[in-house]
Length: 407
Ligand code: HGY
Ligand code: MN
Ligand code: MN
Image (spheres, rainbow, N blue to C red):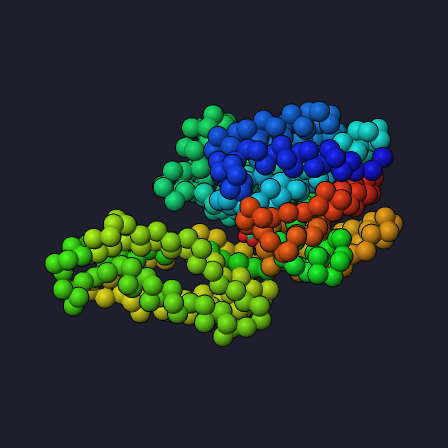
Protein backbone atom coordinates (compact mmCIF):
# COMPACT_ATOMS: atom_id res chain seq x y z
CA UNK A 1 0.00 0.00 0.00
CA UNK A 2 1.21 3.47 -0.83
CA UNK A 3 0.24 6.90 0.42
CA UNK A 4 -3.36 7.81 -0.38
CA UNK A 5 -3.56 11.15 -2.23
CA UNK A 6 -7.26 11.71 -1.49
CA UNK A 7 -6.85 10.97 2.23
CA UNK A 8 -3.95 13.40 2.41
CA UNK A 9 -5.79 16.13 0.52
CA UNK A 10 -8.89 15.69 2.70
CA UNK A 11 -6.78 16.12 5.84
CA UNK A 12 -5.14 19.26 4.45
CA UNK A 13 -8.57 20.77 3.76
CA UNK A 14 -10.04 19.71 7.10
CA UNK A 15 -7.06 20.92 9.16
CA UNK A 16 -6.99 24.27 7.33
CA UNK A 17 -10.56 24.95 8.48
CA UNK A 18 -9.25 25.49 12.04
CA UNK A 19 -8.33 29.11 11.41
CA UNK A 20 -9.19 32.46 12.96
CA UNK A 21 -9.23 34.08 9.50
CA UNK A 22 -11.41 31.94 7.23
CA UNK A 23 -11.12 33.10 3.65
CA UNK A 24 -7.87 34.91 4.43
CA UNK A 25 -5.36 32.15 5.08
CA UNK A 26 -4.69 30.03 8.14
CA UNK A 27 -4.21 31.80 11.46
CA UNK A 28 -3.74 29.20 14.20
CA UNK A 29 -1.74 30.50 17.15
CA UNK A 30 -0.65 28.28 20.03
CA UNK A 31 -3.30 27.56 22.69
CA UNK A 32 -5.96 29.47 20.72
CA UNK A 33 -9.47 28.15 20.03
CA UNK A 34 -8.19 27.15 16.59
CA UNK A 35 -5.32 25.24 18.21
CA UNK A 36 -7.78 23.31 20.40
CA UNK A 37 -9.94 22.33 17.38
CA UNK A 38 -6.87 21.25 15.39
CA UNK A 39 -5.57 19.39 18.44
CA UNK A 40 -8.81 17.41 18.76
CA UNK A 41 -8.72 16.58 15.03
CA UNK A 42 -5.10 15.41 15.08
CA UNK A 43 -5.61 13.27 18.18
CA UNK A 44 -8.66 11.62 16.56
CA UNK A 45 -6.57 10.82 13.47
CA UNK A 46 -3.78 9.42 15.64
CA UNK A 47 -6.29 7.10 17.36
CA UNK A 48 -7.87 6.16 14.01
CA UNK A 49 -4.45 4.97 12.83
CA UNK A 50 -3.89 2.84 15.93
CA UNK A 51 -1.60 5.15 17.87
CA UNK A 52 -1.53 5.67 21.64
CA UNK A 53 -1.93 9.42 22.16
CA UNK A 54 -0.28 11.65 24.76
CA UNK A 55 0.58 15.30 25.23
CA UNK A 56 3.45 16.98 27.06
CA UNK A 57 3.71 20.03 29.32
CA UNK A 58 3.83 22.45 26.36
CA UNK A 59 0.97 20.83 24.47
CA UNK A 60 3.04 18.91 21.91
CA UNK A 61 1.13 15.81 20.82
CA UNK A 62 2.57 12.33 20.30
CA UNK A 63 0.93 9.24 18.73
CA UNK A 64 2.91 6.09 19.45
CA UNK A 65 2.95 2.70 17.68
CA UNK A 66 4.77 0.35 20.02
CA UNK A 67 7.58 -1.75 18.55
CA UNK A 68 8.54 -5.37 19.23
CA UNK A 69 11.52 -4.10 21.26
CA UNK A 70 10.15 -2.82 24.56
CA UNK A 71 11.57 0.51 25.84
CA UNK A 72 13.49 0.99 22.60
CA UNK A 73 14.00 4.57 21.32
CA UNK A 74 11.39 5.90 18.87
CA UNK A 75 11.60 7.06 15.30
CA UNK A 76 9.63 10.32 15.45
CA UNK A 77 7.91 11.66 12.32
CA UNK A 78 6.01 14.91 12.09
CA UNK A 79 6.13 18.70 12.24
CA UNK A 80 4.31 21.68 13.79
CA UNK A 81 0.60 22.55 13.62
CA UNK A 82 0.70 26.22 14.52
CA UNK A 83 0.83 28.90 11.80
CA UNK A 84 1.88 32.45 11.09
CA UNK A 85 -0.97 35.00 10.94
CA UNK A 86 -2.83 34.65 7.59
CA UNK A 87 -0.47 31.88 6.59
CA UNK A 88 -1.02 28.91 4.32
CA UNK A 89 -2.60 25.47 4.72
CA UNK A 90 0.62 23.53 4.26
CA UNK A 91 3.40 25.05 6.41
CA UNK A 92 3.84 22.54 9.23
CA UNK A 93 0.45 20.92 8.59
CA UNK A 94 1.79 19.03 5.57
CA UNK A 95 4.44 17.44 7.79
CA UNK A 96 1.96 16.44 10.49
CA UNK A 97 -0.35 14.96 7.86
CA UNK A 98 2.57 13.12 6.25
CA UNK A 99 3.43 11.68 9.66
CA UNK A 100 -0.19 10.55 10.10
CA UNK A 101 -0.09 9.02 6.60
CA UNK A 102 3.02 7.03 7.56
CA UNK A 103 1.14 5.67 10.58
CA UNK A 104 -1.87 4.85 8.40
CA UNK A 105 0.42 2.89 6.06
CA UNK A 106 1.97 0.97 8.95
CA UNK A 107 -1.58 0.09 10.03
CA UNK A 108 -2.84 -0.83 6.55
CA UNK A 109 0.25 -2.90 5.79
CA UNK A 110 -0.06 -4.55 9.23
CA UNK A 111 3.50 -3.58 9.99
CA UNK A 112 4.75 -4.01 13.57
CA UNK A 113 8.10 -2.23 13.75
CA UNK A 114 11.04 -3.34 15.92
CA UNK A 115 11.59 0.21 17.17
CA UNK A 116 8.52 2.28 18.07
CA UNK A 117 7.16 4.83 15.61
CA UNK A 118 5.87 8.15 16.98
CA UNK A 119 3.91 10.76 15.05
CA UNK A 120 4.43 14.24 16.50
CA UNK A 121 2.48 17.49 16.16
CA UNK A 122 4.29 20.39 17.77
CA UNK A 123 3.18 23.77 19.03
CA UNK A 124 4.74 27.18 18.45
CA UNK A 125 7.32 26.50 15.76
CA UNK A 126 6.52 29.84 14.11
CA UNK A 127 6.89 32.01 17.19
CA UNK A 128 3.79 33.98 16.11
CA UNK A 129 2.72 34.17 19.74
CA UNK A 130 5.63 33.23 22.04
CA UNK A 131 8.96 32.34 20.44
CA UNK A 132 10.08 30.31 17.47
CA UNK A 133 10.84 26.58 17.74
CA UNK A 134 9.33 26.53 21.22
CA UNK A 135 7.65 23.11 21.08
CA UNK A 136 10.74 21.23 19.89
CA UNK A 137 12.99 23.30 22.18
CA UNK A 138 10.97 22.17 25.21
CA UNK A 139 11.29 18.51 24.17
CA UNK A 140 15.06 18.67 23.65
CA UNK A 141 15.71 20.84 26.70
CA UNK A 142 17.03 23.95 24.97
CA UNK A 143 14.22 25.66 26.86
CA UNK A 144 14.21 24.32 30.43
CA UNK A 145 10.86 23.26 31.91
CA UNK A 146 11.49 25.69 34.76
CA UNK A 147 11.62 28.53 32.20
CA UNK A 148 8.26 27.83 30.51
CA UNK A 149 6.55 30.16 33.01
CA UNK A 150 8.86 32.99 31.90
CA UNK A 151 8.28 32.60 28.15
CA UNK A 152 5.76 35.36 27.46
CA UNK A 153 3.76 36.37 24.40
CA UNK A 154 3.76 39.90 23.07
CA UNK A 155 0.95 40.75 25.51
CA UNK A 156 2.99 39.47 28.46
CA UNK A 157 0.93 36.26 28.96
CA UNK A 158 3.19 33.34 29.89
CA UNK A 159 3.07 30.01 28.07
CA UNK A 160 1.98 28.26 31.26
CA UNK A 161 -0.85 30.77 31.91
CA UNK A 162 -1.98 30.48 28.29
CA UNK A 163 -1.99 26.66 28.57
CA UNK A 164 -4.07 26.78 31.76
CA UNK A 165 -6.49 29.24 30.15
CA UNK A 166 -6.84 26.78 27.25
CA UNK A 167 -7.46 23.87 29.63
CA UNK A 168 -4.19 22.13 28.77
CA UNK A 169 -2.17 20.32 31.42
CA UNK A 170 1.08 22.26 31.88
CA UNK A 171 2.16 19.92 34.68
CA UNK A 172 2.96 17.08 32.26
CA UNK A 173 6.66 16.37 31.59
CA UNK A 174 8.03 17.87 28.38
CA UNK A 175 11.78 17.25 28.33
CA UNK A 176 12.68 13.93 26.67
CA UNK A 177 15.87 12.03 27.39
CA UNK A 178 17.63 11.84 23.99
CA UNK A 179 18.01 8.09 24.68
CA UNK A 180 14.27 7.79 23.99
CA UNK A 181 14.69 9.10 20.42
CA UNK A 182 16.30 7.03 17.64
CA UNK A 183 15.73 9.58 14.86
CA UNK A 184 13.52 12.50 13.83
CA UNK A 185 12.06 12.78 10.31
CA UNK A 186 10.21 15.79 8.93
CA UNK A 187 8.54 16.57 5.62
CA UNK A 188 8.00 20.28 4.97
CA UNK A 189 6.98 22.42 2.03
CA UNK A 190 10.04 24.08 0.48
CA UNK A 191 8.63 27.59 0.87
CA UNK A 192 10.83 28.64 -2.05
CA UNK A 193 11.00 28.25 -5.87
CA UNK A 194 13.87 25.78 -6.40
CA UNK A 195 12.02 22.44 -6.65
CA UNK A 196 9.23 23.80 -8.85
CA UNK A 197 11.62 25.71 -11.14
CA UNK A 198 13.74 22.58 -11.64
CA UNK A 199 10.74 20.23 -11.78
CA UNK A 200 12.13 18.07 -8.97
CA UNK A 201 9.54 16.53 -6.62
CA UNK A 202 11.74 15.96 -3.55
CA UNK A 203 14.52 17.99 -1.92
CA UNK A 204 16.65 16.17 0.67
CA UNK A 205 17.91 18.85 3.04
CA UNK A 206 21.55 18.81 4.15
CA UNK A 207 21.72 22.02 6.20
CA UNK A 208 19.48 24.70 7.73
CA UNK A 209 20.35 28.38 8.18
CA UNK A 210 21.01 29.79 11.62
CA UNK A 211 18.81 32.62 12.81
CA UNK A 212 18.28 35.16 15.54
CA UNK A 213 15.15 37.14 16.34
CA UNK A 214 15.23 40.40 18.31
CA UNK A 215 12.45 42.40 19.87
CA UNK A 216 13.40 46.11 19.88
CA UNK A 217 11.70 48.78 22.01
CA UNK A 218 12.13 52.50 21.30
CA UNK A 219 10.83 54.80 24.02
CA UNK A 220 10.28 58.53 23.44
CA UNK A 221 7.85 61.03 24.92
CA UNK A 222 4.18 61.32 24.01
CA UNK A 223 2.95 64.75 23.05
CA UNK A 224 0.42 66.80 21.15
CA UNK A 225 0.89 66.62 17.37
CA UNK A 226 -0.23 70.23 16.98
CA UNK A 227 1.33 72.15 19.81
CA UNK A 228 4.76 70.49 20.15
CA UNK A 229 7.47 72.29 18.14
CA UNK A 230 9.59 70.00 15.93
CA UNK A 231 12.76 70.71 17.95
CA UNK A 232 11.05 69.74 21.22
CA UNK A 233 10.00 66.22 20.31
CA UNK A 234 11.20 62.76 21.37
CA UNK A 235 9.33 60.94 18.63
CA UNK A 236 9.72 57.15 18.94
CA UNK A 237 8.47 56.53 15.39
CA UNK A 238 11.04 58.86 13.85
CA UNK A 239 13.84 57.16 15.78
CA UNK A 240 12.54 53.68 14.91
CA UNK A 241 12.12 54.41 11.20
CA UNK A 242 15.58 55.97 10.99
CA UNK A 243 17.02 52.83 12.59
CA UNK A 244 14.97 50.42 10.45
CA UNK A 245 15.93 52.23 7.23
CA UNK A 246 19.60 51.45 7.93
CA UNK A 247 19.17 47.70 8.64
CA UNK A 248 18.68 46.00 5.22
CA UNK A 249 22.00 47.39 3.96
CA UNK A 250 23.79 45.55 6.78
CA UNK A 251 22.59 42.21 5.38
CA UNK A 252 23.37 43.27 1.80
CA UNK A 253 26.89 44.29 2.82
CA UNK A 254 27.35 40.96 4.65
CA UNK A 255 26.43 39.01 1.48
CA UNK A 256 26.56 35.18 1.59
CA UNK A 257 22.75 34.96 1.38
CA UNK A 258 22.44 36.80 4.68
CA UNK A 259 18.92 38.15 5.11
CA UNK A 260 17.31 40.60 7.52
CA UNK A 261 13.59 41.22 8.04
CA UNK A 262 11.59 43.66 10.15
CA UNK A 263 8.32 41.75 10.23
CA UNK A 264 6.40 43.11 13.19
CA UNK A 265 5.97 46.80 14.07
CA UNK A 266 3.75 48.24 16.79
CA UNK A 267 3.26 51.95 17.56
CA UNK A 268 1.78 53.29 20.78
CA UNK A 269 -0.52 55.01 21.40
CA UNK A 270 -1.10 54.75 17.64
CA UNK A 271 -3.23 57.89 17.22
CA UNK A 272 -2.95 60.41 14.37
CA UNK A 273 -2.66 63.42 16.67
CA UNK A 274 -0.27 62.00 19.28
CA UNK A 275 3.51 61.98 19.03
CA UNK A 276 4.28 58.27 19.63
CA UNK A 277 6.20 57.45 22.79
CA UNK A 278 6.64 53.71 22.25
CA UNK A 279 7.58 51.60 19.23
CA UNK A 280 8.17 47.87 19.27
CA UNK A 281 9.58 46.01 16.29
CA UNK A 282 11.20 42.66 15.53
CA UNK A 283 14.38 41.95 13.58
CA UNK A 284 15.00 38.50 12.05
CA UNK A 285 18.57 37.83 10.83
CA UNK A 286 19.60 34.60 9.05
CA UNK A 287 22.59 33.16 7.30
CA UNK A 288 24.16 29.82 6.46
CA UNK A 289 27.26 30.71 8.49
CA UNK A 290 27.16 31.83 12.12
CA UNK A 291 29.90 34.45 11.63
CA UNK A 292 27.61 36.42 9.28
CA UNK A 293 24.72 36.38 11.74
CA UNK A 294 26.98 37.55 14.57
CA UNK A 295 28.50 40.32 12.46
CA UNK A 296 25.16 41.71 11.34
CA UNK A 297 23.87 41.40 14.93
CA UNK A 298 26.83 43.44 16.20
CA UNK A 299 26.21 46.17 13.61
CA UNK A 300 22.46 46.21 14.34
CA UNK A 301 23.08 46.68 18.05
CA UNK A 302 25.56 49.53 17.34
CA UNK A 303 23.04 51.39 15.16
CA UNK A 304 20.26 51.01 17.74
CA UNK A 305 22.54 52.10 20.58
CA UNK A 306 23.58 55.22 18.61
CA UNK A 307 19.98 56.50 18.81
CA UNK A 308 19.98 56.72 22.60
CA UNK A 309 19.67 60.38 23.61
CA UNK A 310 18.15 62.51 26.33
CA UNK A 311 14.68 61.90 24.93
CA UNK A 312 15.01 58.49 23.25
CA UNK A 313 15.77 55.21 25.01
CA UNK A 314 16.31 51.92 23.17
CA UNK A 315 16.31 48.31 24.37
CA UNK A 316 16.92 45.00 22.56
CA UNK A 317 15.57 41.62 23.73
CA UNK A 318 17.00 38.55 21.94
CA UNK A 319 14.02 36.17 21.72
CA UNK A 320 15.68 33.42 19.73
CA UNK A 321 19.16 32.36 18.67
CA UNK A 322 19.99 29.11 16.89
CA UNK A 323 23.15 28.20 14.98
CA UNK A 324 23.13 26.87 11.41
CA UNK A 325 22.71 23.09 11.46
CA UNK A 326 24.04 20.26 9.28
CA UNK A 327 21.65 17.28 9.24
CA UNK A 328 22.56 13.59 9.53
CA UNK A 329 24.46 12.30 6.47
CA UNK A 330 23.31 8.74 7.24
CA UNK A 331 19.67 9.69 7.15
CA UNK A 332 20.29 11.91 4.14
CA UNK A 333 21.48 8.83 2.24
CA UNK A 334 18.59 6.68 3.49
CA UNK A 335 16.11 9.36 2.31
CA UNK A 336 17.92 9.67 -1.05
CA UNK A 337 17.93 5.87 -1.34
CA UNK A 338 14.19 5.78 -0.67
CA UNK A 339 13.64 8.34 -3.45
CA UNK A 340 15.76 6.24 -5.82
CA UNK A 341 13.90 3.01 -4.90
CA UNK A 342 10.62 4.80 -5.53
CA UNK A 343 11.98 6.16 -8.79
CA UNK A 344 11.44 9.75 -7.61
CA UNK A 345 13.93 12.34 -8.84
CA UNK A 346 15.43 14.29 -5.97
CA UNK A 347 18.15 16.79 -5.15
CA UNK A 348 20.16 17.85 -2.14
CA UNK A 349 19.43 21.34 -0.88
CA UNK A 350 19.81 23.75 2.00
CA UNK A 351 17.00 25.41 3.93
CA UNK A 352 16.60 29.20 4.27
CA UNK A 353 13.66 28.56 6.58
CA UNK A 354 14.01 27.40 10.16
CA UNK A 355 12.47 24.07 11.16
CA UNK A 356 11.95 21.91 14.25
CA UNK A 357 14.38 19.51 12.57
CA UNK A 358 17.23 21.90 13.43
CA UNK A 359 16.37 21.71 17.14
CA UNK A 360 16.14 17.90 17.13
CA UNK A 361 19.50 17.74 15.33
CA UNK A 362 21.12 18.74 18.66
CA UNK A 363 20.02 15.47 20.27
CA UNK A 364 19.40 12.87 17.55
CA UNK A 365 19.87 11.94 13.89
CA UNK A 366 17.57 14.06 11.75
CA UNK A 367 16.23 13.87 8.20
CA UNK A 368 14.24 16.61 6.45
CA UNK A 369 12.65 16.48 2.99
CA UNK A 370 11.01 19.29 1.04
CA UNK A 371 8.11 19.10 -1.40
CA UNK A 372 7.49 21.84 -3.99
CA UNK A 373 5.70 25.12 -3.19
CA UNK A 374 3.63 26.58 -6.05
CA UNK A 375 5.37 29.77 -7.26
CA UNK A 376 7.67 29.39 -4.25
CA UNK A 377 5.07 31.11 -2.08
CA UNK A 378 4.63 30.53 1.68
CA UNK A 379 3.54 32.38 4.82
CA UNK A 380 0.57 33.65 2.82
CA UNK A 381 -2.92 32.38 1.88
CA UNK A 382 -1.67 31.54 -1.66
CA UNK A 383 0.62 28.81 -0.25
CA UNK A 384 -0.06 25.58 -2.19
CA UNK A 385 1.43 22.12 -2.70
CA UNK A 386 -0.22 19.53 -4.93
CA UNK A 387 -1.53 16.38 -3.24
CA UNK A 388 0.57 14.22 -5.58
CA UNK A 389 3.69 15.95 -4.24
CA UNK A 390 2.50 15.47 -0.66
CA UNK A 391 1.85 11.77 -1.32
CA UNK A 392 5.31 11.32 -2.90
CA UNK A 393 6.87 12.86 0.19
CA UNK A 394 4.78 10.63 2.46
CA UNK A 395 5.94 7.56 0.53
CA UNK A 396 9.58 8.58 0.96
CA UNK A 397 9.01 9.12 4.69
CA UNK A 398 7.23 5.75 4.96
CA UNK A 399 10.10 3.86 3.27
CA UNK A 400 12.61 5.66 5.49
CA UNK A 401 10.60 5.14 8.69
CA UNK A 402 10.24 1.43 7.83
CA UNK A 403 14.01 1.11 7.48
CA UNK A 404 14.80 3.09 10.64
CA UNK A 405 12.24 1.21 12.76
CA UNK A 406 13.59 -2.14 11.53
CA UNK A 407 17.02 -1.78 13.03
O1 HGY B 1 10.57 31.36 10.13
C1 HGY B 1 10.76 30.26 9.62
O2 HGY B 1 11.72 30.04 8.92
C2 HGY B 1 9.77 29.16 9.84
O3 HGY B 1 8.74 29.31 8.93
N1 HGY B 1 9.26 29.19 11.19
MN1 MN C 1 7.12 25.51 9.13
MN1 MN D 1 6.65 28.89 8.74
